Length: 315
Image (cartoon, rainbow, N blue to C red):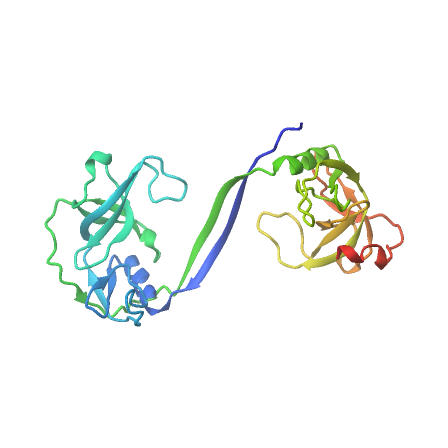
């Protein structure tokens, strides 16, 4: 049997949100080397501040300034930092209750090793050299030999010049994708400029790309059937927004294509024709680039359009 393929994949996008008055004040304060919390209905000081009381759900607005030093309440050693974490060398994840706060803040502690970390140790904020109004303005915590503060938070208006009002956080997922036996056979065939599907032994339909089981009957599939290479556009959309790292000029067309002999439409880009001339029923064929492992796009064959009845069940 052909080798089962694997490939590293990354899903990444920026997530942007508006902050509101409480989080805006907190992040702007970090930019100005000031740590703010919020006083809850029972008098506790919550750091990082929340917009609503975690116990009563009451809206919270009374901001207070707490210290930049505090006490480790619990910790875990991280021997192998990953990309995007606060430090590139081994460090401890710590929960720190800052002086004047009643809750703990999660961050990194720069320590020589796990033997140098303990619950109850005193630590202080190490501020980032360049601060923009984000939690990363606290570069990390570091051990602090100084005495504890008086524990009395001071009232704060939360007002700063040029406040931070939005937060953009990059969301990223790195993972290894394994397509399984059926799709590995499909991808190996594409590398040889062939398209293969699998036939369901029950309903006799041919599915491309194959999934290893019939999506209708739930029966395992294993009989390979070569389809195409030509096919028919069933439905399509016009893409007007350029994707990052995709070297294709907009607008362009992405379509569902029912390959000859297949009972499931696959999706691919349409080229070789103006985007506003693509239509349902258009007959197309694959175009391969040199050394390409899969079709770069599909182009018109020049045949008459397919009759609607021949592909209506695949829309």
